[in-house]
Image (tube, rainbow, N blue to C red; front, side):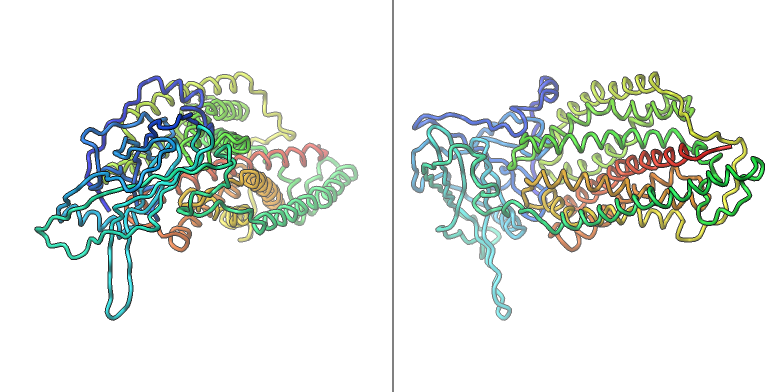
Length: 606
């Protein structure tokens, strides 16, 4: 549903740049508790409305024909709240601390047929509203819809014109807030003639009750009155599945390192001692042909600048992902609001740009790169350019439909300033330190000037097969957990199992490293020394499996629909797959490099 409305300019002074760097607002997860005296006014802010099954499609509450003050005054919002689509404004509801109200009139309205049709369409699309009382979200449906019978078929639509607010307090603080329509009869919106006006009277009640709970965080998580699903419970199936896979892969790699490689090294070194220097390459290598390519295995790859940029940005996102999970483990995020996570992600992305610049420039100089300025530009553009293009399309769709998810111009300038003043300079500084501190590559084997001819490879050692195997195994380790993450980001679940998430994240990286070592060993055994890019692509292809899973989730596991939600879902799902490609490709490459150095250092050369 497209609701016509003029998006308002939200005041964001340049001071929020400093606030962003210090953690944004009153800090992630820190409860801004207000202390009240009996009779003190409690401000209720109206926030947003939108389809229940499209979490990212939201509109301002006053874009619907509802009770609205003559002059709308908006609340000053933090950056995280703006990014989360919040647009809070003062309402006509008059609530005083610990004073009950029984069916007070909010306003009288005369709705035209067009306004009634707008409400009908919103109710048919299961629009819900979100209010905010003392930083506590209060949610409910706009109206009521009933479908019954086949012959005859009935389709009834009603609007909730009375709301019951239930607030719990402890001492001088509000602990819990909820809204209910349990004992209320909806006002029918059916049978209105085109030239007829509909008269409505909106009312509300307020009931206060004392609770023994002293802090909001002490309430059972997910207990928001049942509007959204309760917090996810621990899913042991996902953990057991991932642990079994990790044990199998680690055992498999251990067998390779301890038995196969030991036999290879013993055989090669024995042949070196018993064979003359000129005939050392004449014995039958069989399937253990990795020794014969020792003069080519450290031959630097093509597009080395792009490879180093991938490794730098991948290392940055590894640090970013670890930082977000650790912050969540430390209780720095409020489960009810996601704005703090958005702010923390922006802060950490800007600060970790130095990691991408350092890793990329350091390795680029090690492998003989000379155009380090171009390498820095490529590194800083590798993620920011695709992200900007994707965001531009998604934001334009939101803006065209009047959604609150469209960022105001001042917020866009703020984010751009943060990147220009923090992110990009840190990338350059990291690149300078990486270039100056780079030591020689110091390969265990000398590389010949003329490359060795690579023998024909069987089909099961092709790049496509390696990408399929290397991407599917890490994906299978997180597939169950991935559903819960998608249900949180793109649904209405509340994810609080950050310890399990950290454990699964570690499992993902471990599986990626193990499968990379195994695939690299098989590739070298076939006398194919082009492992540099292959190691990145093999495990990095997990990002492709994650994107394919997002398509499956959209089609089979969700009820999302409409252009606004669809464009946002697939745009950011594609970016998510790209980020996983960068992260896991980096882990895969450095694991393979460490493994190759190990086996060739322990091999006696001529």
